[in-house]
Length: 307
Image 1: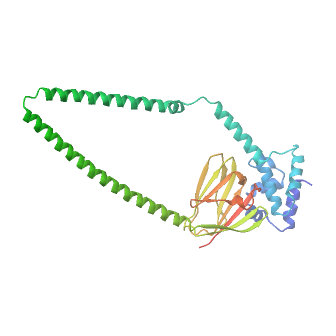
Image 2: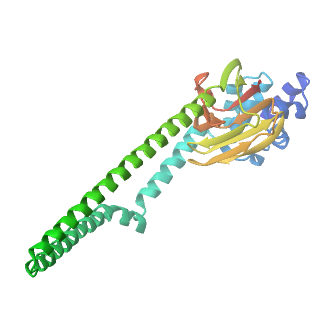
Image 3: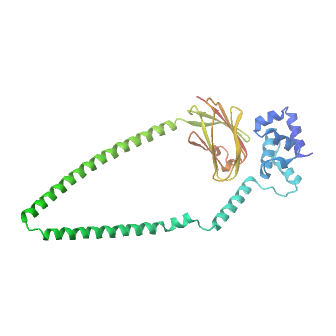
């Protein structure tokens, strides 16, 4: 019996429709139909064939390992590449390509930037010394040509008063600047403490683990929840709110996508094709979902939002 027929019979025995299975697994109905018809070419990619077959099998209580072995025999491959192997291969290939590229103009400029800065500083210092020396020579010439000691004395006294006045103004300005800096520092610390206190109210607690489905409870969240999805390597993912899909797609390494959920969302569901390479941030707080089970690659995460 084919893989598709085995899965279809198991679904029928459990009394599930394709719509029920789509709701449970979050796999699109057209992909479920393609699997039951053994039309694996209709799925998003080769490594998602194994992921969706595994998730389908677990949803109808079948041995996913046995079906994956049968899948390898049916497709004529002795060993099907796992999702991690495909991701590692693509990552290594990309890094090799980037390392062979010639340095850009920006990189070349960045390399010589320290040398340029040093040269500019040295030129500025030399110019300042020359300017000061020239002014001193002019001042000496003016003093020598002066014929009145009283006039010279008066000039010196005037210069001393100006210097004293300038020093006093500079001192007052420095004190004022220090006060402003102190006020700004206190305000920044107060804002930081307030922000930290607000973010610490949110809490995510694990409540149930069932095969590849993980259930959590979210408390202390904002009225409008913001989700940020990221990927350390190529990964497929989908997000639903109250059973309605908000977004799905495949992120490449280093990419991210932000989803703002509707106000009053009571249930959030994540379907991850490569959970080991996926990062989730909820309202600015990183969600460490791998601590319950770091070995499961394809997983469903359900978060019940509480007031």
